[in-house]
Image 1 (cartoon, one colour):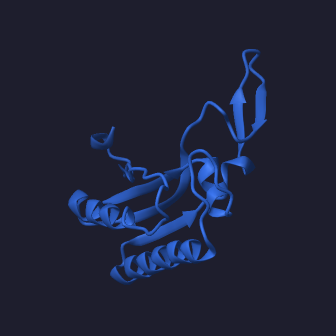
Image 2 (cartoon, rainbow, N blue to C red):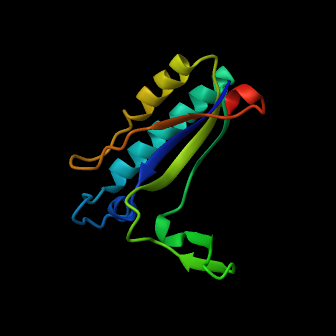
Image 3 (tube, rainbow, N blue to C red):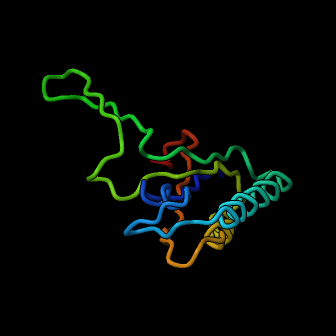
Length: 138
């Protein structure tokens, strides 16, 4: 079965990763950022070797986000981010093809072990099965 595995963060977390401490995120050192990228790279390599990795990407900071919605008048409303009312946004994802929910949960347990500096926020990893088009998925 295919699964979408998602990690979350906030704009403040991205700022912390750029070395700018703030009320909710410590300043990350270059070594801490590199350790995170090395961890994620090794995870991606392992998932590619097992054949479970379909796709995986990190996303740019929420400040570079654009939201397209529908206004009360039925016309599109376009807003640039970040959004004060939004606490956490998608930071990255994997699309995985795993034999079971238990296997994808093992992978998520590995994801939460990603190194980060003391005081950094810990967000849960979200696992969502991807519909295969059958009525049983609805």
